[in-house]
Amino acid sequence: MPGKLEFSFNSNRLGEFVLDKEVMTIGRKEDNDIRIENLAVSGHHAKLLTIFDDSFLEDLDSTNGTYVNGQAISKHPLKNGDVIVIGKHELRFINEARSDTDDDKTILIRRQPELATYPGSSSQHQPIDMPGSSAPVNLEAAKLQILNGKGAGKELLLQKPSVKLGRAGAEVVQINKRPDGHFIVSLEQEGNNNLLLINGEAVGARAVKLNNHDVIEINKLKIEYYLAV
Image (cartoon, rainbow, N blue to C red; front, side, top):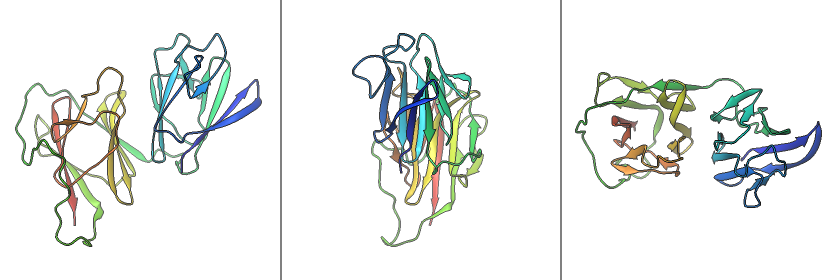
């Protein structure tokens, strides 16, 4: 179920917006999904990316900044109860499907200068090859394995509902566990649409379901996704 934003000014509630689109913009201009007519608000002030129950807020280089719970942000994963301040207006994020606790994990990765070959690479995103269409999938045993660089061979079990891959202080992509599999989405879109590659193909703004032996590439670091059956 998508979240929503409760819109208020000077503690007076003005309405609410349901986050029922994958990408929504906030700003002063008429072409925004959420329009705030105030000179303190930039024409295109901030952007919301929503994938399933997860919503992420990004400041679009606004003049006066975007704040969440009193802190200026550039990119921020929203949690139930977060208060967004844009100009003098408040937008409270409501989504009881999102836990208020920190239930995700961030993996810090470094840019790899070398290009390494990897098994199973392909220009096509192939379906999972499993014997029998009814074979049960054990998502609890799914894992990632680093294929190149100094961390080659290291593994991470995907046991958390959400796992972020990124640099210190700047998450790059997020993997979300859903009942029907793991889905990966890029958290950085502006000016860098090829940041995340799956089997050599750019993902862009899409949420992509991971298949067994898919190779994820972030800043030349290659990570293979393993799905147990």
